[in-house]
Length: 505
Ligand code: NOJ
Image (cartoon, rainbow, N blue to C red; front, side, top):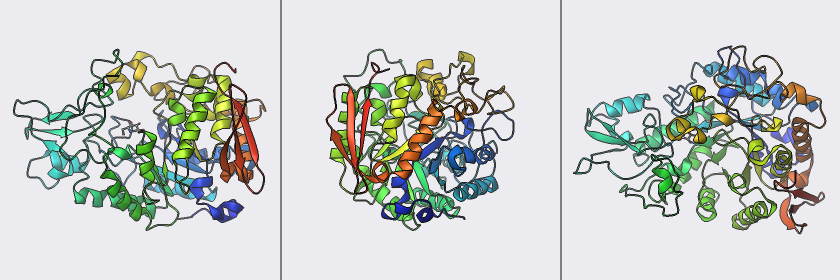
């Protein structure tokens, strides 16, 4: 595979691995670009739009890496996070040959390719689960987590799913329940079985051999559960207006995730990645700072645990500053921070903080010390789509109520003012946002006051400026309502001062 010549592309990068100096752009493939006119985005569509992302001089956004959400064969119960085959491409997205072309085309533009790895659960259509469910004595029975009902016939424990309802479904044929912390269509793999670990490590090698540069690891802190599957305690502080079926929201998640022994698995996983050069492991996980920081290990687990804290804070200077300072104080010297302000799981950034503050958010994300991950469309200031009830697709929204739907943040990318915003030639799988005729790449590309122009400018500054890319962080005393910080570097310091808060619009 054609590997990007990073030393040539960023002269000072030899001090730092690529994932420390990169800006990552998240592509949600269903909604990025439809290449074959079926209303759903695909890998060919991504190839067609690579020049937009990087490599075409000043016209390009100027990102360094893409993370592509799942494109594997899937019944799409959770839009690809229910994987039926880890080593292939769903026909809706293309095929392996198209994936190889994508990696080549990206590398030629010096774009690194990070793919989603969904190790906690498969689809119920995966052949491993079909075998496992086939009988108590089947070879793959122990590849998933099966338990007898309690003596009174009730569920094996009290855990709740973030998608609503309990985490256990009874298989009437074998009389046992299987564990699924997400949908019943997403049975949980048994990572305490060494054969599962081995098979899932081979999946990493399969894609590394095809030239990928890293993995974004889905709910990586969930791989191991309490060995005795004990009940979770109730959370007395839970809101009392939660949907009736939100069992998860009413519990402390003590036994179902973030178990101490998961770090042993991650160390072994890291040694698989270390068989290859220059690979990056990014992890999706939350938790308190003290628990979260453990996922770096002793530089032998994840390279970049995602940090979603800026999305979880009230949008004001005091809270944001406190969050950054706490992170900086918690990280060991050698560990590199990461920042995320948007994703396919959250409401749109511009809808959360307002259009004017979305510009400040862009400045914050692209000037802090750490690797930023930017969600597709946020560079246009895209807002939440309005999805009529009949077109709701996200299982979380369908099970827990429209207010919990992730569809509004997943509407198609807006490329131009054409009938389907240049995304497709037919009505897309989710409706476009109402302002797609005015808010799109074509309309913003040459407007110096546009959000897109701002992102391009900031990305240009960041890639050209050693202090912004790799300088140290120091809080700078600023006036009320302002978060100011210094990025210090021998080549020259930078002072960033941002008025953060809904009052500053
Ligand atoms: C996190 C993913 O980002 C989300 O979209 C998915 O529904 C869950 N993990 C389950 O895989």
